Length: 417
Image 1 (cartoon, rainbow, N blue to C red):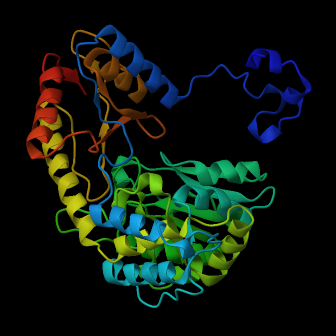
Image 2: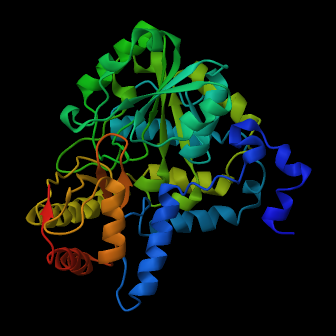
């Protein structure tokens, strides 16, 4: 039977309201990433002789370091690593606490009670609302941003209040824009710095303000920090947990996906307030049986070698420099971020004497269909597109060739801003 035929059976009426109920699967709206996928396929069909330059991929372009891979192979061969890991092994938790101290200058993290592993950051974000959200409770999210915590808040009958990340505020949320009645009903505040998609970095002053705000309104802070160690030009990695009082109000999520090129390995950790860590551990215990112990031990090796991340950051910094220079030559106002592999630039209003762009999505579709350059649009707070410097290139010379090709393809039009 086809999906359409199954939609006429009782299965269709049994879906939960949270995913659409009886109308699940019948929505004809095309979502952003599906539009990008379709546009890429159409462009490659129309121009098969031109290579598509994919600047939209939000994951590393290289494999994990050879030492990490070798450690996985070594540990995977040991019979003592074959079983369930449940809430993790002690040696991983100890490595995570040491990593926070050595890389982020976070003192006093108890590996027993204040760290627990997660199967990447996404499942942690999905489970944390189950620790706090009752029907009617509020999670405060930033937009643009990563929606998972908000999605699961809604699944649980909660509400999401959004606060815009604006260029004039360095893409930091203005906490004063949160109405007091919302703040007092809120259970969770989600932050993500360095930020996806804006590339913005937080400051000690901002995090200090967050701690004071959270204490005033009794809100739990969830700081999602997968890009925290990827910093440039002398910027030191900054952890929310390094701020006095931060552990009293929240936790921080770390992942090895971006900082160690371990995206598919699915390993990270939650650290901070011991009550939150305990609650997450209990919910997690009812969701999964832990990540493969050999992967955890390979991650221990990675965390003890932060120079791996430093080398990755040097590559991204170099690519950012190249891309920023070219985009500015073409009339954009591009500013190199202090962290992450994302470059967030305002979309032009149109092409001189030609097509107009009413949104970032319009411009992104133009880039894909007319120039075979893929980006990700964001129209939540202004009209922007996100470039990622994780494009495929083997070494500095190939990087320069890719960026030169972007310049060549865009030089035959004049953008209006």
